[in-house]
Image (cartoon, rainbow, N blue to C red; front, side):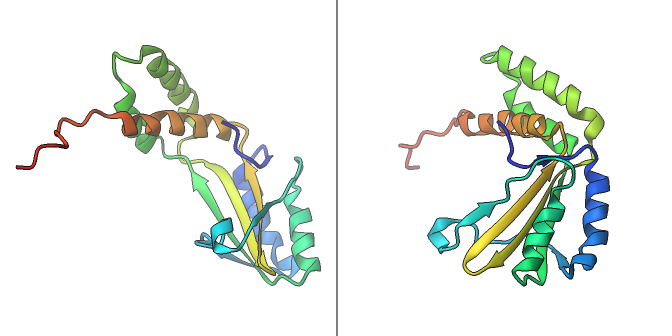
Length: 167
Protein backbone atom coordinates (compact mmCIF):
# COMPACT_ATOMS: atom_id res chain seq x y z
CA UNK A 1 0.00 0.00 0.00
CA UNK A 2 1.30 3.42 -0.87
CA UNK A 3 0.02 6.44 1.02
CA UNK A 4 -0.34 9.53 -1.13
CA UNK A 5 1.92 12.43 -0.18
CA UNK A 6 5.28 14.05 -0.55
CA UNK A 7 8.15 12.33 1.21
CA UNK A 8 10.13 14.47 3.65
CA UNK A 9 13.25 13.31 5.44
CA UNK A 10 12.27 14.69 8.84
CA UNK A 11 8.56 15.07 9.61
CA UNK A 12 9.25 16.70 12.99
CA UNK A 13 11.30 19.39 11.24
CA UNK A 14 8.62 19.81 8.54
CA UNK A 15 5.86 20.23 11.13
CA UNK A 16 7.86 22.84 13.04
CA UNK A 17 8.51 24.77 9.80
CA UNK A 18 4.82 24.55 8.81
CA UNK A 19 3.74 25.89 12.19
CA UNK A 20 6.33 28.66 12.10
CA UNK A 21 5.85 29.77 8.49
CA UNK A 22 2.02 29.71 8.29
CA UNK A 23 1.81 33.22 9.73
CA UNK A 24 4.22 34.53 7.08
CA UNK A 25 1.67 33.41 4.48
CA UNK A 26 -1.17 35.06 6.41
CA UNK A 27 -2.63 31.68 7.36
CA UNK A 28 -3.93 30.59 10.72
CA UNK A 29 -3.40 26.92 11.56
CA UNK A 30 -6.02 24.94 13.42
CA UNK A 31 -5.18 21.45 14.61
CA UNK A 32 -8.03 19.05 13.98
CA UNK A 33 -9.69 16.85 11.38
CA UNK A 34 -12.22 17.91 8.78
CA UNK A 35 -15.15 15.60 9.40
CA UNK A 36 -17.99 15.06 6.98
CA UNK A 37 -16.70 17.24 4.16
CA UNK A 38 -14.31 14.89 2.45
CA UNK A 39 -16.46 12.67 0.29
CA UNK A 40 -18.65 12.99 -2.77
CA UNK A 41 -21.80 12.01 -0.84
CA UNK A 42 -21.57 15.16 1.24
CA UNK A 43 -21.18 17.23 -1.91
CA UNK A 44 -17.59 18.26 -1.29
CA UNK A 45 -15.07 16.51 -3.52
CA UNK A 46 -11.48 16.40 -2.32
CA UNK A 47 -8.55 17.64 -4.35
CA UNK A 48 -5.27 16.04 -3.31
CA UNK A 49 -2.34 18.36 -3.81
CA UNK A 50 0.19 16.66 -6.07
CA UNK A 51 3.59 17.64 -4.88
CA UNK A 52 7.12 16.44 -5.08
CA UNK A 53 9.74 16.54 -2.41
CA UNK A 54 11.66 19.46 -0.90
CA UNK A 55 8.95 21.19 1.11
CA UNK A 56 6.36 21.57 -1.65
CA UNK A 57 3.87 22.37 1.10
CA UNK A 58 4.97 25.99 0.70
CA UNK A 59 3.41 25.91 -2.77
CA UNK A 60 0.20 24.70 -1.13
CA UNK A 61 0.40 27.67 1.27
CA UNK A 62 0.98 30.05 -1.66
CA UNK A 63 -2.03 28.64 -3.47
CA UNK A 64 -4.24 28.96 -0.39
CA UNK A 65 -3.02 32.52 0.12
CA UNK A 66 -3.65 33.45 -3.53
CA UNK A 67 -7.34 32.48 -3.35
CA UNK A 68 -7.93 34.23 -0.04
CA UNK A 69 -7.91 31.34 2.41
CA UNK A 70 -7.31 32.54 5.97
CA UNK A 71 -7.06 29.26 7.90
CA UNK A 72 -5.93 25.69 7.33
CA UNK A 73 -6.70 22.58 9.31
CA UNK A 74 -3.69 20.39 10.06
CA UNK A 75 -3.09 17.17 11.88
CA UNK A 76 -0.43 14.53 12.15
CA UNK A 77 -0.24 10.83 12.86
CA UNK A 78 2.20 9.54 15.44
CA UNK A 79 3.42 5.96 15.35
CA UNK A 80 2.26 3.85 18.30
CA UNK A 81 4.13 0.57 18.13
CA UNK A 82 2.54 -0.81 21.31
CA UNK A 83 -0.93 -0.44 19.79
CA UNK A 84 0.25 -1.90 16.48
CA UNK A 85 1.81 -4.91 18.23
CA UNK A 86 -1.45 -5.47 20.17
CA UNK A 87 -3.39 -5.43 16.89
CA UNK A 88 -0.84 -7.83 15.39
CA UNK A 89 -1.49 -10.43 18.10
CA UNK A 90 -4.61 -11.45 16.14
CA UNK A 91 -2.39 -12.45 13.22
CA UNK A 92 -0.23 -14.83 15.26
CA UNK A 93 -1.89 -17.98 14.03
CA UNK A 94 -0.56 -21.23 12.58
CA UNK A 95 -2.98 -20.85 9.66
CA UNK A 96 -1.00 -18.02 8.05
CA UNK A 97 2.69 -18.39 9.01
CA UNK A 98 4.02 -16.41 6.01
CA UNK A 99 1.77 -13.49 6.90
CA UNK A 100 2.97 -13.52 10.51
CA UNK A 101 6.64 -13.72 9.46
CA UNK A 102 6.25 -10.75 7.10
CA UNK A 103 4.37 -8.72 9.71
CA UNK A 104 6.96 -9.53 12.38
CA UNK A 105 9.74 -8.27 10.08
CA UNK A 106 7.84 -5.04 9.49
CA UNK A 107 7.19 -4.54 13.21
CA UNK A 108 10.88 -4.99 14.02
CA UNK A 109 11.90 -2.66 11.21
CA UNK A 110 9.46 0.03 12.37
CA UNK A 111 10.25 -0.17 16.10
CA UNK A 112 12.84 2.66 16.00
CA UNK A 113 10.09 5.03 14.78
CA UNK A 114 7.83 4.54 17.82
CA UNK A 115 6.53 7.95 18.86
CA UNK A 116 7.68 9.62 15.64
CA UNK A 117 5.42 11.60 13.32
CA UNK A 118 4.74 9.51 10.24
CA UNK A 119 2.27 11.68 8.36
CA UNK A 120 1.20 15.34 8.31
CA UNK A 121 -2.01 16.46 6.65
CA UNK A 122 -2.98 20.01 5.65
CA UNK A 123 -6.51 20.86 4.46
CA UNK A 124 -8.81 23.74 3.72
CA UNK A 125 -12.30 24.14 2.36
CA UNK A 126 -12.93 26.64 -0.45
CA UNK A 127 -15.92 27.02 -2.74
CA UNK A 128 -17.33 23.53 -2.13
CA UNK A 129 -13.98 21.79 -2.57
CA UNK A 130 -11.66 20.35 0.05
CA UNK A 131 -7.98 20.81 -0.75
CA UNK A 132 -5.49 18.51 0.93
CA UNK A 133 -1.71 18.27 1.05
CA UNK A 134 0.11 15.37 2.69
CA UNK A 135 3.67 14.91 3.87
CA UNK A 136 5.02 11.58 5.04
CA UNK A 137 8.17 10.02 6.42
CA UNK A 138 10.11 7.72 4.04
CA UNK A 139 9.07 4.67 6.09
CA UNK A 140 5.36 5.60 6.48
CA UNK A 141 4.14 3.32 3.66
CA UNK A 142 5.62 0.35 5.54
CA UNK A 143 3.84 1.46 8.71
CA UNK A 144 0.53 1.66 6.83
CA UNK A 145 1.20 -1.79 5.35
CA UNK A 146 1.85 -3.24 8.82
CA UNK A 147 -1.26 -1.55 10.19
CA UNK A 148 -3.36 -2.97 7.37
CA UNK A 149 -1.90 -6.45 7.82
CA UNK A 150 -2.51 -6.35 11.58
CA UNK A 151 -6.05 -5.04 11.48
CA UNK A 152 -7.41 -6.93 8.47
CA UNK A 153 -7.16 -10.20 10.35
CA UNK A 154 -9.49 -8.95 13.08
CA UNK A 155 -12.29 -9.25 10.52
CA UNK A 156 -11.58 -12.95 10.02
CA UNK A 157 -11.44 -13.83 13.68
CA UNK A 158 -13.60 -16.88 14.30
CA UNK A 159 -16.83 -16.29 16.14
CA UNK A 160 -17.81 -19.19 18.37
CA UNK A 161 -21.41 -18.07 18.63
CA UNK A 162 -24.06 -19.71 16.51
CA UNK A 163 -25.95 -17.03 14.64
CA UNK A 164 -29.01 -19.28 14.55
CA UNK A 165 -29.02 -19.90 18.32
CA UNK A 166 -31.99 -17.97 19.75
CA UNK A 167 -31.55 -18.72 23.45
